[in-house]
Image (cartoon, rainbow, N blue to C red):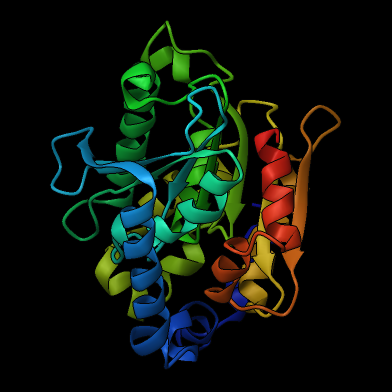
Length: 293
């Protein structure tokens, strides 16, 4: 195994917790961050043309929300939330649809079942089911299936990378290999073994060494498309999150496959989403460019 994937031997369990247990560094998370996002999301659902809780699978949380900009031919942004595969809900992230719908983008926020009720292996499969449903029902949903970008944050960044590694025609011969036109993993978890060794987090994930190896983009799921990607990390994030982003770019970027590493200056793991929601920010502008605007 390459040096990039053996660095975890340098850290103790306590040091891993400091690097990955990000809520511990934001004591205002439950009192300020989540309520702020939730209130903005309520406004988004009240003001944007949307269809909520569209079921795409049999799991309890296998539902998606569609936010329409008024142009069915516009780009489609599929967003997958984070929460270390064990927390969060799609309803918290409706606020991200506000700036994109105003800019002429149709946004779909995907929900999925959480650990430990399901495994992270199953979660990736659920998002594949969601994207398959979106592609097959695009006309009914009122979106353009030929202009799909996938974006996800944290665990959602890992899931985004897994979608870039998915062989869509093997699932349905009618689905194109280049179904996803661009990918934007935000603060992704590209290599899962360090997360497994983080005791406070893995207690809820229940990931063993075999699953960590099998479900890591770095070890078993390289992108199988040359669609461009932008891997994002907050300037104020821990060293491990910078490493997680950088190693993916360094391994998989090629002359044919453009993968940009973009650093959102000065913000941590959570505030980078507030920057994304700011229509005047470079992060928002670069995302729009990835969408083809």
